[in-house]
Length: 91
Image 1 (tube, rainbow, N blue to C red):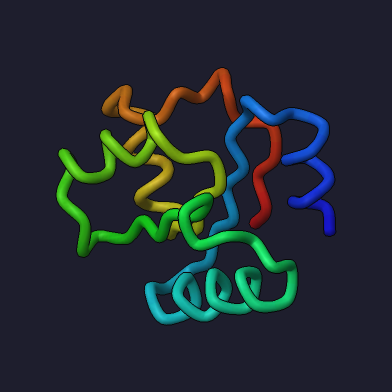
Image 2: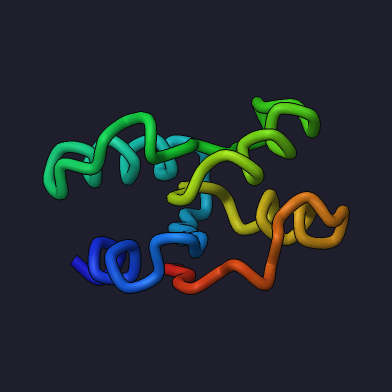
């Protein structure tokens, strides 16, 4: 519900939900899509299985991200994640 509210309050902002492992990232994105009825096209799963190029494009085009903390940290350090647009970070 918090993520849905932030999406409504800050439609141009980025929401990030982190989980410590890839399986948990997958589990959380599926649960949120089902329970909160978030459209699949609004969400992105970012793990080490996606290339840097794929992640860079995702950060530019999407709004709700499910990722491991390492990916978020690395992408912020690389300048891929527009950190000024982050409005909600769930850990």
